[in-house]
Length: 578
Ligand SMILES: Nc1ncnc2c1ncn2[C@@H]1O[C@H](COP(=O)(O)OP(=O)(O)OP(=O)(O)O)[C@@H](O)[C@H]1O
Ligand SMILES: CC(=O)C(=O)O
Ligand SMILES: [K+]
Ligand SMILES: [Mg+2]
Image (cartoon, rainbow, N blue to C red; front, side, top):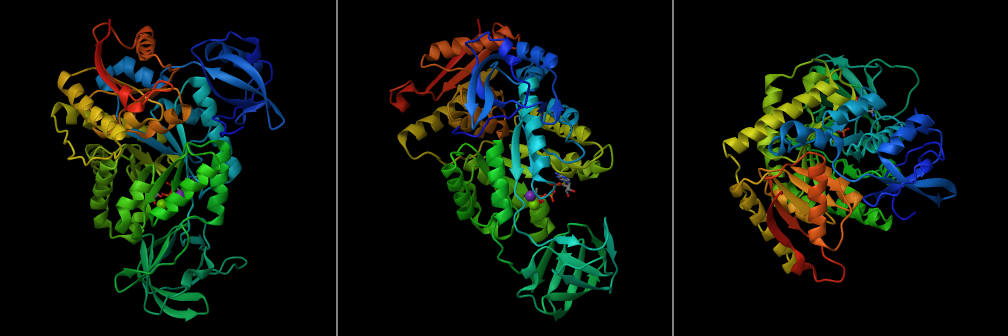
């Protein structure tokens, strides 16, 4: 099979085969190996049969790597959550800012994942720093199963561990207090049992180049030490600023206000294995930790194209001070960016983080790359059921900056109130988005031209004009017909008032668009006949009772009929539903 499987679901053989009513509106979405459970979830024949009736309409038997499998065709249309939102709130009430949830032990069951999906999770993030690949595989399969079974459209992102110096053992299961003046040994050597005041780091070369007098900062300021003696590769350090040592605390060394670089590669051997794992599980995004330059991003993208996994999007995480000097090149090289404020705060002074966030968000918008704001948005909700007022202000600011997406980390992964935290993001973004619209606070970017070829420049100008028109005419929705999502993304870049319904016949495009501001991706069959595409998709929305006669849509397309010259077929029109 050339492409990675879009989903890997396990089910009993023969069940879907009992319903061979071949629906013409259906798309082949993936291949199903036949085993007895679905991502660890037993699925008995009866249950699947009813599912088969509702969502899975036709099957064809195929063989994949010796496994007897079925191709499954799934109903086309809008995902269940967007559909519900549209019914309840109307076109203008649809949330534009996308939500990413980190999946951890507190939310990895099928039930919890379903609740997060229902609560508006657009992308599930798996941090490869934690847990086993088997654990991650089960989670990915559960998400893909839920997408299929319940009609969700949740994309999967893996986040690489990357190379960073951190604590692996400090002798206690939780946090330890470092008192002022106490003396500790930092080592990379393994030792049996526990030794008081001894901290083991993950990387053997962690003390290379470090000198007596250097400052060792824990987690960007949780505690600080002065290096008082070098003993081979071990360091004796005296606590100068008391505080807490967490189990995976990050270590950074400073001299004369400058960070000492450890020169570790952005992707470690383990990261490459995790990337292969992601490829084989058919993930949609790879978030690359500790990116320092554009070359590392290009390198990974090249690697993915050699694996025929070009459709996997590479997101560069901005979390090192070095990356800040090369922001434009990094953003240009990547398919999107994450402002990873957690580790960023280890390498740059905390007071700089808000301006870095704004700058990165601005560059991403200029260069038309989706941007995620991550870490500590609702940190207090890991423990408490309500956010602090300051956290709500922080979330509001990210929405005001028109970031594409916001991310939960520990709040969902290990927190007590993950679903509630997600609903806070949901409510705060809806409120701020509608306020921005009503107050007309939309600040149009002085956008530089992106495209070089005439074709690309035409697309760009059509989208810029389309959004101006949509806002001025007050249309209810924008419909865009797109193969690879370019025009959907160019429309999103202009942050229009109405939602953007992106109709595509490419499932990878659909899953990538989940991260883009204001875009609701739909998987449909598309033909060379644009009139027929429009009629069919309007019918689809109308039939499901989601649009009514008199609703006005603005229509844009980047589809090129087979054998035609691209530029001739880009189009823009306004249509009232009759
Ligand atoms: N799969 C998992 N298994 C166990 N714990 C997890 C998992 N994912 C996250 N966690 C827990 O949730 C906390 C926050 O998660 P997150 O992945 O955002 O960490 P982070 O340190 O901010 O990210 P990064 O390592 O990419 O900088 C982690 O410290 C960890 O305790
Ligand atoms: C998300 C992440 O990697 C960080 O904030 O450091
Ligand atoms: K990570
Ligand atoms: Mg990080």
